[in-house]
Image: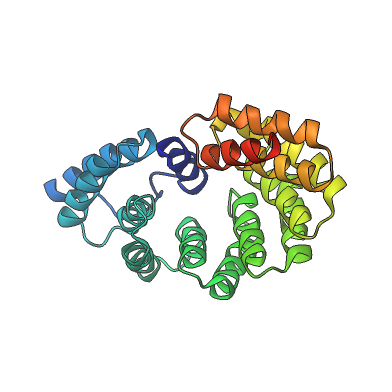
Length: 254
């Protein structure tokens, strides 16, 4: 599970520091910057308790730094403390309303808090920011919000736009295929999810493997489905879908 969390941190944590965010003029601010750097590195490495401690120390020393607040939000996000994550990312946006990284993360947090429509409102602001260096990210998060709303055509439109920007994006490929699967467009779903498998395996993200197997199973191709379920057990022994794969295989082989 930690590898999956690291995968999502890589997606959300686009920049550790914000150019022009305050000036150094005190020992406290310099110390806060040091703790911010350390905490951000710990986040990226998956050392989440240590990251939280470092970032809380940074906040103690510099309570008006939006990057510290944003990264604190992420530290709580990966620990499933979404209420605290929302509190800190909202603080980051109060300090810097045009902070598009933080607003993108705010959208993702709102999705996890069961407010996908509110997330779409926030994410559209990020999409409209033509200076934002990572335009695929709010497009993917908007697609996920529409996916949660079961508006699968709108979801696919946004995932495709993200893929037009970044062809190898694992999340966009995976959710694009899952949208087709939910619509029971199984032939297209298996094709899309098979592509996602190739892009996601190196990140140890097992979701497209599982839904590829399910799409093949529902399409009546038990041979391919069985192969995919076996792959999940072999490649992701501690993955989210491993026990489900074992259970389905057991049922298939009765």
